[in-house]
Amino acid sequence: MSPHGRLAFLDGIRGVAIALVVAVHAVSYVGLSLPSSSGRYSVIFALAVPPFFTVDGFLFCHRMAKRSPVSHGAYLTSSAQRLLLPWLVFSVLYLVLRGTFESITPSAERIVLGQSPGGLLMQLYTSAAAPQLYFLPSLFLIRALAPLSLALFRAHICILLFLLGVYTAMFGEYLQAAYLDLFRISGLDPVLHALWGMQYYLLGITLFRVWSHIERHPLAVSTGFVLLAPLFLAHPSLKILFQFALIAGLFSLMWVASHRVCFLSRVGRHTMGIYLVHAPVPIKLFQLVSDHVVTAGIAFPFVWTCSLLTSLFLAVSIGNTRFGRFILGLPRSSHRPAAPHTATDTH
Image: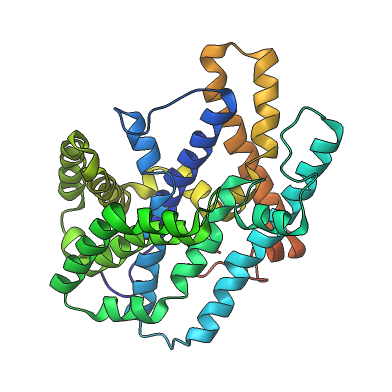
């Protein structure tokens, strides 16, 4: 792919990913239990959060391929504004809302009330009031390793593939267990999830490096990956390869089909806002409505669809104000550049 080639297809990938993120959370709110390792449900979990890491790795390489001047300090500053600022603002907001809810609902689990200052900081760190927020500091930690990512981008493709395989195997067999034994942090630890997400970030670097071959026959490549993916479900240790195959297939498919799925692309352009606002408030409200209005059989699609559309509306509305763009970590200008810089938004 040319360094100045189109990147609009990434909006479609984000659209699929954020729709599935909302779906996963809707499942928990309506009380369903979907086994993440069996049948068609495994696709939902495979394509929810991981593609965001992959997209960010792909975009990092795109920027490097253009030979844009790169300052590690400036890159971290920009990433802090785009990732850590929204994480902090919305984490504090949701902790306040949760504390208010606990104060008027004596039977509610105590996440905020009764916590010591240290306990509140830990609840903030683990995104206890809004579990989806862990992704933002996790991605920032990965971006902090930009010099390493640059070295991998410049490495020979065989070395890159070897390192991707070694890191993936190490995380699955040793790294995750060693980290949990060492720190024993309850909840969604951003550091642990950064180590987990690095697998998919490396996949994004790898996909960029081989993209010139993939783009020649994207439909064939996409079909091949999708047909190959189920073969990896037979053994739990190969589940990561199932995810890799589906993500690579999604990239290839969206390269040729993103202009045909305009709604997904529109959703993808507002992913950051949707990610921040869809839970816990809208999704909980629609869950309460579904308990009284719809039958159990359609509760999940009702909560999922309404939460996604409402979050899209809120994301667009918030993003249309100067303050809203600030708390979403978006540039002040309403102009959208052709090459996005954030895995969860194209602004």
